[in-house]
Image (cartoon, rainbow, N blue to C red; front, side):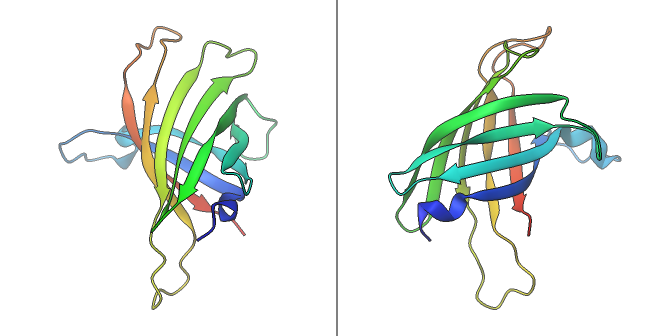
Length: 138
């Protein structure tokens, strides 16, 4: 896979890293958003993480910048920084494109990794981590 194949629109979901089983899957929810990425041949990656309610204008947006590289898999690091009114948001992302199974049916490109709250905001402390999946849309 070429790093430019990261370019696209994804449904992003992040999950709290709770080790015990939960009776309500929503207890794992950290965030859900639209992730739009553009990757260049030089490995530069940019885009936006857009949090909004379905059918509504964006509530908050973080600008995403980072790099990607390809060896056996495409891996990437991103920094997300909030636009007004969330300029105090700063998150760091580390991820990779998951394997595409040759015999898979209906498989989509999926990004997976971890996210770190790099700076505190709104009473939430820095250092919180979550796992994320981003599923490419058509």
